[in-house]
Every structure is written in structure tokens, then in C-alpha cells.
Amino acid sequence: MSRRQLSSWQQLEFLAQKKQTQHMNQLFDDDPDRFDKFSIELPNMLLDYSKNLIDSETMLVLNALAQATHVEQWRDKMFAGEAINLTEERAVLHTALRDFSQQKITIDDKDIAQQIQQQLAKMKTFVTNFRQGHWLGYSGKRITDIVNIGVGGSNLGPQMVTEALKHYSDNTVNVHYVSNVDGAQIVEILRPLDPRKVLFVVSSKTFTTTETMTNAQTALNWLTASSFDPKAIEKHFVAVTVNQKNALAFGIAKENIFKMWDWVGGRFSLWSAIGLPVALDLGFDKFEQLLLGAYEMDIHFKQTPLEKNMPVIMALLSVWNTTFLGCKSQAILPYDQTLHMLAAYLQQAEMESNGKSVTWNGTPVDYPTVPSIWGGLGINGQHAFYQYLHQSNNVVPADFIGSIESVTPVKGHHETLMSNFFAQTQALMTGVNEEQVRADLTAKGRSQEYIDKLAPHKVHAGNRPTNTLLLQRIDPKTLGSLIALYEHKIFVQGIVLEICSFDQWGVELGKGLAASIQQELSAQEDNAEHDCSTSRLIAYYHQNK
Ligand code: F6P
Image 1: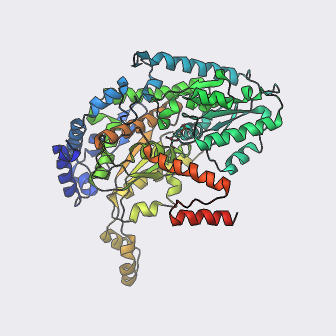
Image 2: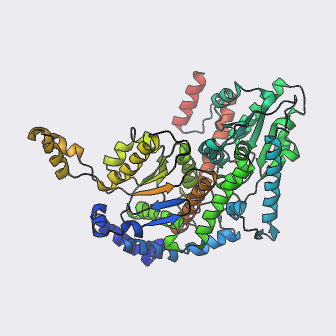
Image 3: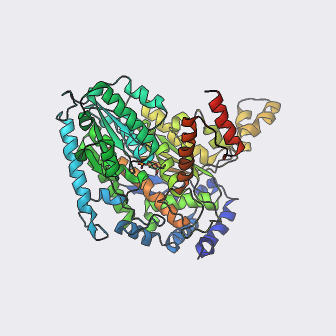
């Protein structure tokens, strides 16, 4: 049965029609218990979703949709290791990487919990050894800098976490990230470094990604240019990959290869050895705290009834705003400097997961699916793109994420920051109507002519949906919970919308074309098979090179 045929779906379409004429101001006036009804508190975070265009009936029917689409059953299948990545016929078990329950998890009769524990133990030994200064470079010097080479899920997760948890680093080592194949990045990162003191972590699930392989080769050339010791690579390169064969062929020593598994999606791989740079920087205990925070969110997701389940609620609200109310994008707006990379991280997590347009059996979907995700630090956004959020005729639902305590308190700063945090969601919701604008200008003694001219420009329609996530403070555990919250939200969205969330076929076409164009560029020849735009661009590139 198609999603559209479900009675909950049809009821939501009907409710969405009704909502077009409602304003949240009215909903708040009508119901003083709105906050209590539409908020969820967990030990380290609070979600207030009352500033959405919803009421109890909407939430009831959204929950009915979650039930009708068997969210709970699919969730249990995921945790049990069933092959819910339907097009790649794989299990989806990033949750197993942070499962502190000691339960046996089997895939094809193999106990993967044991394999995970082995890798974690290997990571721990390596990290401890390294941080105690026992891991030395080829010339006997201590390593001062780690350069992670990876892209997408092999970069965004660890880099976002490194940035978010900088405060917890004891500066045993400096961590750098190279993701771009544009040489400008690696050259600038390597320029001040001493090859005798650098450890490269080549992170690539497949160990075939062109950008990563190109950067890894450049790093190797840079290292070997400084040393005639053929064994230098053993002291300066480790790999994290599923593809041991390619890592060995690259020259990385077997004992320096950390295992990944094909049942861990790249964009959900932070919890595996892909998180190695985080552990090297912060220490293994803090990495474990990150895992623990995620595990706590897993427990909440597994055990809490749908109507109080944070990731489920956030997913249903996204479906409501996008599929039923027609919003096309969603902003991620952290009011915590440490989370400055969160929007970039969630872009991959959500857009690569759910940016699809066919159902599980390949039928085109005839309803809007996920929004495009964008955003950045809210406080900076206020002086850049918030004009659009407040007054453009595109409504952009937004997640506001802030912390009660700052990890780096400076007198007066946090209150200024958080007053903006609270003010913005209120302003987006209440808006200001023409009558209020006119009264305000009149009270300021403005002329009637001036008021008539200015009033329409000062009107804010309001009624713009926001979620507020208030964290206690950014620490490894809370951050782990926050990331897992979004992971599960994305999963539930996929189930409700009948989208395969765990493949990424859409990135293959461009990759394949780039590989053939690269040959043309190297050979300085034009290939007549392109469309005329692409051919002429390549020819222009050749002529002007
Ligand atoms: O091109 C997209 C992608 O496959 C992502 O899904 C993945 O996170 C990234 O490339 C990097 O892949 P790998 O870890 O295999 O180098």
C-alpha cells in the first residue's frame, strides 16, 4: 500500500489544509499547557517543539502514521542486524559500535560484538601508547601532529567532533583534516609541519575514493622526500578501512590498519575507528564517553513510546513541515561556537541518506520528501541570512541548539548569546502584525506619511516553526547523544517516507564521469561524446592552460 493510501496520511493532508489558516499565536493563546504537552526532557537535553504548527490532534495522527509505517518494527530490525539497507543488501549497525550492553549481535552467524570489542581494544592500546609518547617517528622523534586524510563520512564526523570538543583536548597532539583534492588544502596544512613528527591517518571505508587516495599519495611523497628510510611509512601512516587489500598495497603495515565493516555506513562511521583522530586528541576515555552518550540515545530510541520519543518526534515534525506543509528547506542553527560544523555534518547525514525520489521498491514517490539542510552558527546568521528566515516568503523550519552552560565562560558573553537564542525563536513564532507596527511608529511620534510608507516593510508574519534543543553543556557524552538523536531522526524519516536511507547511488554518476574526464584532461584531448556545453568548457580549459 502506498503511503498516500494510509488513512493517517490522508488525515494529515486534511489537517495541513486547515493549518494554512492558523497562527501559532492563537494556538499558544488557546492552550497554556502547550510547552508541557510539546516538550521532552532527557537527562542531558530538553527538546521544546511547541513552536510548530501543530496541536494534539496533529501529533496524534503523526504518531498514527509512525505506527502505520511500522517505525518500531523497522527500528527493531535495524538493531537486530537485519539487512535493512535494501539496495545494498546489508545490515545497518552503527549502533552496535556503541552498544555497552555486552549483548551478542550476529550477522550471518558471526558475532560482530566480539569483532567490535577487538577493534576498540586495538584503538585503545594504540591511543594510550601514542599519547604516552611511545609511538615515535622514523627518526626517533615524538609525533606532534596528526593529519587525517578522508572525505565525506571519513572526514565530517571526526572533524565536527574535534572542533566541538576542543575544550577537552590536552594538546598532546595537533589534529588537522585534509578532505579536498584541491592541492591548496594539503599544501597549506603540511607547509609548517615537520615530516619526522607527523602521523597520517588515511580514513576511507572503500580505500578507493579518488580525492583521498590522491591526498594520501601526496602525503607519502612528502614524507619520503624527507627520508630515505623505506620503513618510514610504518611509523607515519595508519589506515581505517574495510579494504585491507588496498591499504596493504598502498604500503601501510598490516598492524597499522584499523578495521571497518560494510555494515557501517560512511556517514554513520564516527563511532568506529574513523573516530581515531578524536581519540588520539582527547584520549580514549573521552571517546568512550562520546560512545556512551550515543548509546544512551539508542536506549531512549529503543525503549520510549513513540509519543515521547525524541528522534521519532523530530522526524515526524520534519515530515509534517516538509511533506504536508510544503517547506522546502530546514535550517540548523547552533548557538554554541563549538558546534560550528554541525550543519555541514548534518547536511551529509540527512541529505545523502534521504535525498532520494523512489520508494523501497523503486516506484517514484509522489510527495515531497526531505528538505535541503543548511545553516551555521545562529548568532552569525542573525547578521547574514536571518532576514530571509523572518521575512522571505519561503518558510524555513529551524532547529535552534544552545547550551545552558558555556564550556569557556567569559563574563557577560553567554547571556548575550542566549538572550538572542531565546529571542529569535519567539520572534519567528510571534512575528509582528501591521497594527502593532503602526502603533509602535505612532508612539515614536512618526508622521502618518512615514508610517504608511514603512509599515508593510516592518511586518513580520511570524508563524515560522522552530525546535529548540537546550543542552546542559557540550561535553563528549552530550555530543554523542546529540549526534545519535539526529541519526535516528534521519532513520525514522526514511521509514515514514519509504526512502532507502542507507545507500547513496546518486553520488556515483558524477564520480564515474569525473574519472573519464580526468583522462581527457591529462591527455590534453577533447572527447566529442560530451554535450556541447561540457565539450566547449573542457576545450576552453585546454586552450587557456
Ligand atoms: O561519495 C560519497 C561517499 O561515498 C560517502 O558516502 C562517504 O562518506 C565518502 O564518499 C567517503 O567514502 P570512503 O570512506 O569510502 O572514502
